[in-house]
Image (cartoon, rainbow, N blue to C red; front, side, top):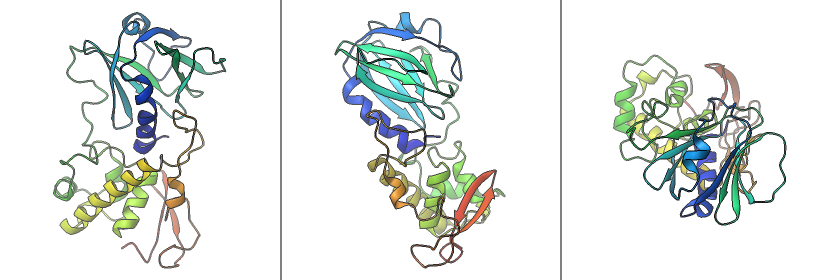
Length: 272
């Protein structure tokens, strides 16, 4: 599933094409996504100017003139493409947003786990966003925060930082890589982190995610940016997907295990 860096890559790719443009028409071909596309979306969005496109966790938030918003979610296989208006349709092209520039934004989603939702300006919060933890780049996310939230937690530290109520964006790939750089085994109990370790881990989560964003994310089977290009952060991976291979730092064999029903890898020498 695309994670924070992949979604941020899509946001950056869409922004220059969307911000300041007016939506001339919305075409919904199949409303059967993870949550049904609202029946009034085409009516409510048509004719509106796009003032901003932001990201919260893995959700894209498109703000329209007047303050109403749309929430776009890529799900497991969703893509948002910027195309010429006459671009031919293919299977699983579910929603089009035609723009006054002559371009259109097309939502393509073979598995239909994505979403295109309406968020009225009168609603201060949205249920999908209300309980999310801080962004990793938010000043509120630091070692002190992570240390306090980890107290008395018996869960493995990898599962702890993957919890979106704790911090958003540390998905499986990025949690594994952050823990490697912090020198912490993924199986350690979160409650046993020292304050120094929590500070180091928070710093490495920010570092890994910032690098991944700059490299366009990690190439995933179903992910591509708005221009169709895949990311390159996979070239920087130290442990994720490298079970049985030699550690690039110390040469020890990378060990693989299943943790919280997710594949995980770590170096027994570099991580304690």
